[in-house]
Amino acid sequence: MGKTIRIAELSKKEVDKILRTKKFNRLAPVSCNACGYKGFFKRRIFKIDGDYDVGDDEGQNVVRYHMKQQYNLEYIHFKIHRNINYVDVAFCSKCNSNKVAFDIELNDEIFDELAKHLNVPKDKIKSDMQDILKRVS
Ligand SMILES: [Zn+2]
Image 1 (cartoon, rainbow, N blue to C red):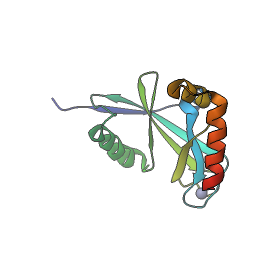
Image 2 (tube, rainbow, N blue to C red):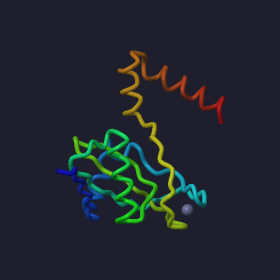
Image 3 (tube, rainbow, N blue to C red):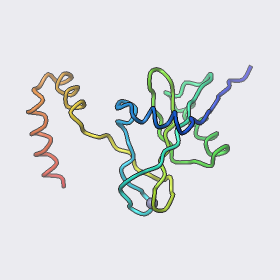
């Protein structure tokens, strides 16, 4: 038997709900690669189900193929939330392109986790990070 894959788009209500989850929305759209817009991005989110492991290239390629065929969406982002696989797509409010760059928001929660992970005080990480950002920007 062949492997199957199921892609189901979340309703607007479900999208609003999941986007309120900090962990899901940690990797979030920041700027449009087509026109440079930075601001509000509309989202479409799809739940991925089936026999493929979306954690590897084969699974991701299958999802990419179906997202292109079914929804004509190419710029997709894979996420795992509560052991469920999702695809997150953002749309530019200005030019409606979905060629949108995602980035990780550096909030306090992230610094807490980094501090724990590196065993370094949070304030030290924050000040080091600011120094680095100053140097590269
Ligand atoms: Zn745009």
